[in-house]
Image (tube, rainbow, N blue to C red; front, side):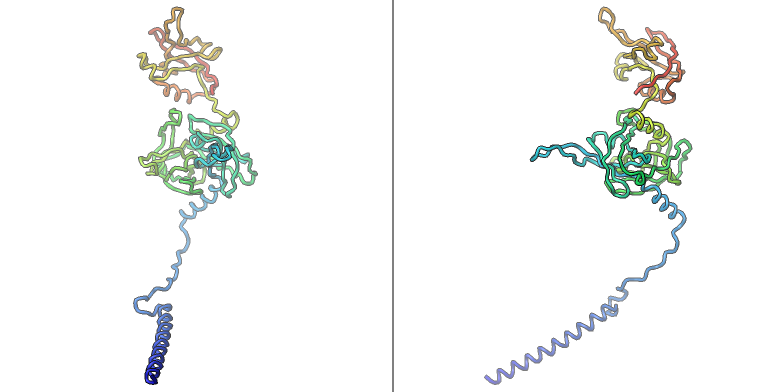
Length: 376
């Protein structure tokens, strides 16, 4: 029995000795590893930072532009009304997001019409992250433009600088700021790829003079500004051409000269007042079915310019037979073959201008002098 006890004590002493040696070796190896001295761990410590020096002039310019322009750009959240399934109360819930920019220190915000088209309400988030309830002031669906208004203090409403689109050049650098996919205050850069493009508005009417750019424009960028290298507004980002729905380098912006013409009217009247003839015309499909070339007049506004000039609407005679009205074929000698042709020609004039309208009536060509009137 005593021999067994002596053997156990000796074994226990050996065990303690080995443990102590292992502990010492562990501490030493840890110190070596921490100092990068263990084989295979050479250089494992953080490396020294290489000084980069000054930013180049181009980078400094872009940074300065963003700092100047970004406070004028806003995030728009559209709201829709839904009924709570438990309380049956009506609630406003977020529907989608878009971009916009501050037009003036009165709180007017410009965006695309399609951003708010189906919304029951909207909220505007400024660059300082404050959120304000917005109300609709006016819309121009044919131009895909809309104006909202928020009641924020003037010191939070820096208006965006306005540029010109008539003197733009292909190859000119441009900058887009917006909220793609809800990521606010995002800057992308590119060039003007082409000028004078035409895109369809939500009403199907063409928007002319559109700017094409390769600056990345994605869902959520709609309504945001396209800027030149001086940080001035030159367009409103409105659409992209993309099979996937994301940017492929073909974006379109409504030119600022159009914006600067439309927005003041929306603020003042809530709609666009443009020159017109005082007539209602038939859709192109109906005119083609009737074998007509030109734009068929369906109605003439009583006491309007066309009525005073003697233009004839479509009507039924005493026997119930339809008598076609005058068919517009030219304005000031410029050929008219479709409703869009007439619409685009009218945009070249102002209210009060006099035009020579060429129509066909009963197979014969006739001309009338028309003073253009204001139409909504």
